[in-house]
Amino acid sequence: MILKEFNEKKPNAVLVALGNDETTEESISELERLLDTAGAVCVARITQPKDKPDTKTYIGSGKAKELSEFIKTRYDSDDEISLVVFDDELSPSQIANLEDILDCPVIDRTMLILDIFAQHATTAEGKLQVEIACLRYTAPRLIGKGAQLSRLAGGIGTRGPGESKLESDRRHLKRQISALESKINDLERTRSIKRARRLKSGIKTIAIVGYTNAGKSTLMNALTNAGILAEDKLFATLDPTTRKLRLPSGKEFLITDTVGFVSRLPHHLVKAFKSTLEEVKYADIIIRLVDASEKYETRMMKQIVTDKLLEELGATDKPTITIYNKYDVAIEEDLIPKDAISISAKTGKGIQALISNLEVV
Ligand SMILES: Nc1nc2c(ncn2[C@@H]2O[C@H](COP(=O)(O)OP(=O)(O)OP(=O)(O)O)[C@@H](O)[C@H]2O)c(=O)[nH]1
Ligand SMILES: [Mg+2]
Image (cartoon, rainbow, N blue to C red; front, side):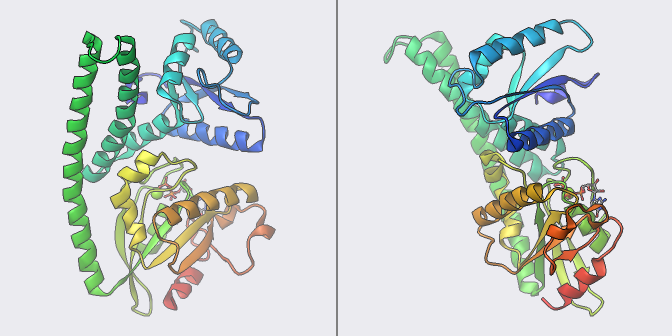
């Protein structure tokens, strides 16, 4: 993948977004965190107030020239720019046009997230899911270029050498995708057998959901000593872990920690991670974790993203416990609902209250 190729020094990147309001700022800040997680450094942010993206170059052509000048000033220096990341999904032709003008690799938000997922996947299933998402993302781009080429080649009936190469690439890609899909189907079967076994055991399952970095793995560890990696990185967890949770009364649950949500999670990833995310769909109870250390508005935005994904997964009709985590570093506490459970998964504060709550669900 793109960012892994730079192995010595962290690559410098410029981030680009359209808009000039607070939402743009938040979104580009999140992109910077994603970039950091992927292993690159943001050296400049560029925003352009514009209602609609330019069909050819996303940002205006003048702005693109300006950016290319900026990149040029750093050629062959220690601060050379190796990457430009756009905070949106770009069309294949926009990427090609921008790379022409900027003379620098261009990626979009989706590719960046795919890259992080590729770096973080550890299990066979996780790796397969990421691979499928990447191929599915690449396929239409190849087809798009192919379509342009075949028109250039003189229309129906004529076959340029480039076109037939593209066709064989496409066929190859299709074969690869279907081979991976059948492997995934096998894994899905295993997962559903396990699920059926759990169902038979009659033990209720809880899924911890929430925006990436909310503290889901930390909470899971606090509850079960699961020893899951919790990190101040986005998408530290990709593969779901399920553990038994035994309450003091003897009541038992199975609790699952899973992949975090993010604003504009690429559709291909949602699709590819279907079997992982189904752990949420089949859970009996949902713990919806909110990061209380963030501003009220950010919390709200992230809750909306989480709820939308829950709806997409068909998991909205379940008993849901909303929990405010990171209470030790909470801000705007007066805006946290009075009846909400507040905890610190890190210090352990409020965990007892949560457990008491679970005793009665
Ligand atoms: N101060 C404070 N930090 C916390 C608390 N809970 C978690 N964190 C920190 O928040 C960061 C993210 O925690 P994780 O448990 O990895 O979050 P996650 O929701 O599992 O994240 P992903 O798996 O990446 O989606 C880590 O650096 C944790 O140490 C808390 O209650 N208080
Ligand atoms: Mg996690």
